Image (tube, rainbow, N blue to C red; front, side, top):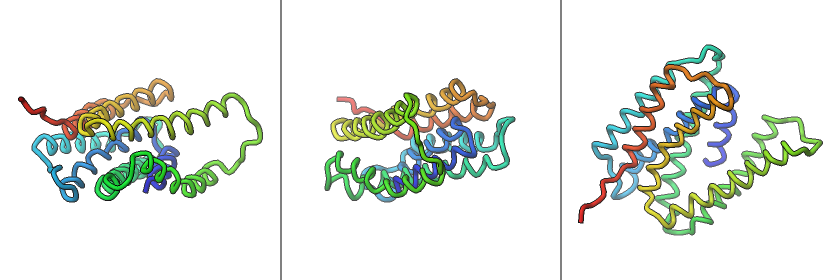
Length: 220
């Protein structure tokens, strides 16, 4: 599921904007919240969680209905692929929590996901980039270093380490910042259009993620 999730993200980016993609992919916390209610003990849906779900899905509906002026006819295909990736991410999280969290160490979970995604992602790379690299330059080296060392190793390992040592409910609250960084990075670095639907949907989704992950601290 981890490998197919990233395949959906990569193929989806061929058809839709990165700013829209990051919002759709971050439907994952809501998949986890709903799934945890039915499949995990002690993690039920509360009023605040349901309010967060409503806000987030309203934001997604607004974004899905809005199209940039430069949008192609296949943009909705990219959007659907990103939503599929979000569902797979959420299901993977639920599976790990229910069946693996008490059986293996975080580093094992991390390595299992990377190892079993290799054949899937290798196939995707061949399909997306049939032309092999015959020269090495600083741009290529930097890109590989960023994706493989910083993203695929350091950030994933640190995240699993944090989950292992700190309250996952408190850590999860920080994920609501990701759509904000993602949307504005797409606008600033990729010159993507900041549509009205994005401006409305972004705060709704971010607020929804925060409410779904928010925990009331006990008063002693």
